[in-house]
Image (cartoon, rainbow, N blue to C red; front, side, top):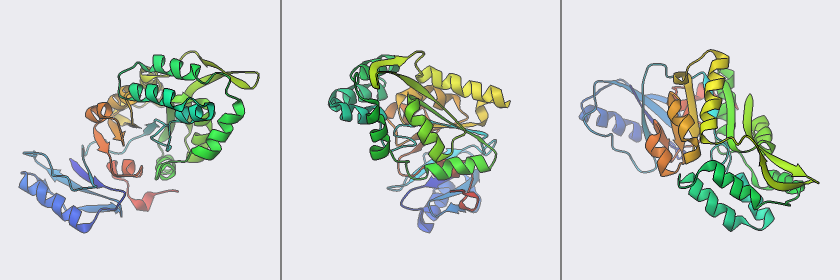
Length: 286
């Protein structure tokens, strides 16, 4: 088993020493620590832990099995995971209905409302929004989250397949996938007529279960199993794919996903997904 430390603020030598000491105190036999980058380190240990490892402020601490640690498929959510915003909320701002749409988004992310129902309700509020607003939204509002490009390009370089699978819209996944370096993308398709949104989504809707279906299809196409997948997301809509993956990661996530994930990242950037797999800065591709 490995204990993995990560933090966007950096992981200090003192953080590493404290973690190794904690492992010994809790009954484990730790190996020498290994620094993966300025922002991550891991410590392999043997034996059972008799208690939880204390977590320093601003530091993510996760336990990862040693077996099958490096994954062959990265599957990632887009909105608020790989990028900084929820695209539909930003489109709602252009349409003048952002508070109404955000309220539905939050309810869906908390798992209080079915995704398909919530998406239909929100897109209906965007009826008659000019297609030009989508381009303005992408250009003005959307940015990759820190570490996104390094994560994706490094996974590609190491021979893994990379997929961006979103409950959002193909208009944005196509562009984000190209910039970040994803080999594959899938999302929902907005219906357009007369250069404006009609307020409808073209069926079928890609939601929670469809994300897991996409994961399974990508595994089958490559002759791998879900155990060889690392999946990352931030909301209830990502639950199925995150729990199906061999390593499911909750990234700056809602409580429902944190409770179900194998690893939780609250203080790290996206390069921490490489650290969880034991991949250090020497292998990074930007």
